Structures are given as structure tokens and as C-alpha cells.
Image 1 (cartoon, helix red, strand yellow):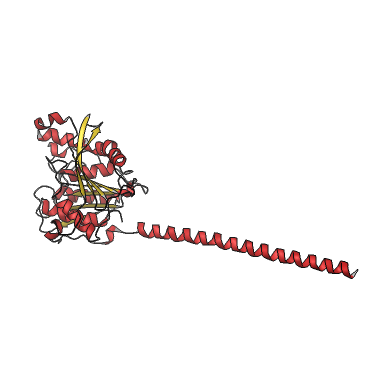
Image 2 (cartoon, helix red, strand yellow):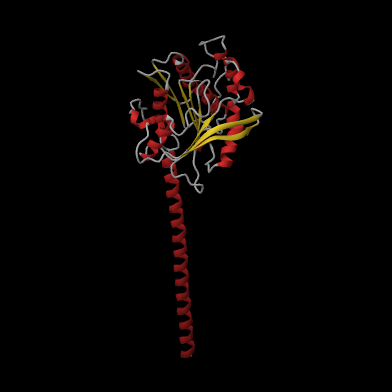
Length: 328
């Protein structure tokens, strides 16, 4: 009888020990799952913090020293791929662009892209070439930690048969340039994304332009709000929406009856316009665009800047501000 009781006690103790071990193991597994949740939460917070950067929270500068636009010893200015050719279904012909790859460009990494429109009667080589002010500015800013690695594409706004370009009048060019609004989104962007190591999505895509290119930049950004998260027009021409300025001329044939209304899902992360108080052409229309967008409730940062005209000196200041704020 004593022997039976002893055996029973041993069995009870063994079962109790097994239960403790099982409970400890379950407790350890629960702790591991909790750690995973904590890590996920931390990652979400980090992403949220980055996306909460407010480009509107900082005033733009217009006192950037000329040295920022010149070549400096020891700075890598990246690589310019010149006259890159792609087929444009919009033009029905081949088109070209210049592409600036950042210093340290690596095909195993992906980069956001900024598309740049030149001014009237310009070309795809105006802003991006081996010695251009924008190439120098971007290289210096990247070297100094003032911007992020990105690819910059200088768009050719001429979107028609290349063999006929020299015969076109100013009025014909004005309407041909309008076709670049679709060419960039339909033809050029897919080509760039296929050819280079590109981050896709509107959060990784910007557009900017100056003068007539500023108007086309606004039109492109607003027509394709699902593709462009950052939009800038520097002293943009008339011809975006109806205005009283240059009314009755081809300069003021509007692309839109009114600005497309952004939704919560496609509101620009940053919408930037600027014009100098010595600009001979585009003060009124720039400020009018600002007022209309304000009435629509579309957030924008529009600067009316003392002491600047309609020239490269002003474009450089504007590009500095834009490069400093996008993709952050």
C-alpha cells in the first residue's frame, strides 16, 4: 500500500513539473510576439515622423551665395546622360532628355525623380548639362547634406515631329508645348522608370519649371495629381487657367477651365510658386494663381520676392528652396 502511494506521489510531482515547463515555454513565446509588435510599432512611428516633415513650416531663402552655383574642388557632381532618346506616342516621334544621376548612383538602390521644364524656346539641355547652374547647385547641395539623392530629368517641351521644329512659329510652339503635359506622364515617366533605378509613386515624383515651363509644370502636376506629389512653378506664364492677363493672345489660351480640385488622397505634399518684384511679365498671373488656389483651399507657398527679375539668378534661388524641401 505504501509502495502504491509513493508511486502516485511521484507521478503527481512529474505532472506538476511538466506543467510548469509548458507554462514557461508559452510565456516565452508570448514575450517574443510582444517584441515583434513593439518593433513594428517603432517602424511605423519612424515612417510617420519622416512623413510629418512640413515643407511649409520653413520660410524660403533668396540670399543663396553665387558660390553654391559654381564648381567646387572635391565635389562629385554625378553623371549627366546627355540626349537620352525615347519614343513619344504623344509626339509620334522620338524625343530626347538629359538625365542627371546623383553622385554615388547605384543600380541596386532606388531614387526619387524630379522632372524639370525649360523656358520658352529652350531645350532639354538648358538646366541639366555638365556645367549648368542646376547641375552645380544640386551637386553642392547633396555634398553639403542640404538635399537627398535623386535623379533629375530635363524635359524637352517640344512634343511634335522633330524635323519640323525649326519652321514653327511662337504661337505654334506654345500649343506644341502643351502636349508635353501628357508626354511626361504617358511616355517619359515609364521610360525613365524602365531605364533607371527609380522609386515610383507620387511621394517620390516631383515636377518643376520656369517661365513657360513653370506654367507647364503646374499643368502637369495638377492634371496628373496621382503621379506627382511635389509641384513647383517659378514665375509661371499665363495659360494655366483663364486670367485677364494677355487676354486674347495665344499666351493666355488656358489648358484648364479651372484648377483640378485635389482630394485628400492626392493633395500635393508641397506646392511652391515664386516670382520676383522686377519680373516684367508674370507677377500678376503668378499672384492670381496663388489667390485662386487659396480660395480653393489648396495649400501652397507662394513668394513675391524683392529684387529679382525673370532670369537664371532667380531660377537658382527657387531651385535651391525646392531641392531643399522635396522627398523629405
